[in-house]
Length: 202
Image (tube, rainbow, N blue to C red; front, side):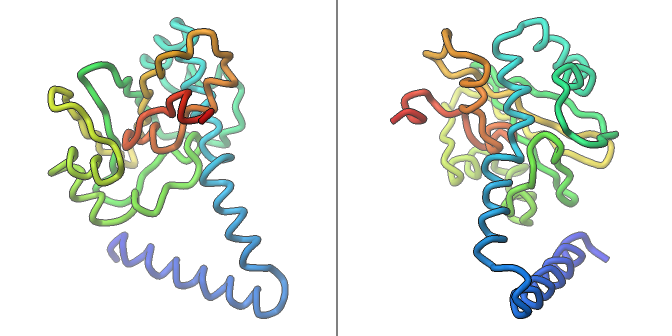
């Protein structure tokens, strides 16, 4: 059975279960929506954001992270749960921008980034970002300079990828915790930049 068909059937089952629980008064739909939204937006990507912030302030950690992702990540004592799939961390830099996709299904470093966004699992993203990455990134709100090279990385069951976004200017005196607040899930997939300080505080 194709991965898309499996995902569709699982979604139908989940919707049916939720409808039954709501009907019997066990759960309220707005509560479920709020929990999922908070996990996607805040709780899920927190581990990855801490990793990125540490790499921004600690050159030694950054080097270790790029050389052996999980070994470096373990230094932070994050609650990531079991993770056996190797991870490669891809550093964005002036002139080179990385973006991650899983063309076969939806392989994704959930221990670091939380739940994958629905668009990441969609067939249009999975097929188009490989063929026309600049167009897809622009549609998602990221318009890169023409002289920036875009490198697309295909996650699989054998290896996961996470983007290390560039540190925003004007954050030299920021604490590690404050820096982590600039790091989003989308920036670690590569479809966005880290939040600029003026955008976060504005």
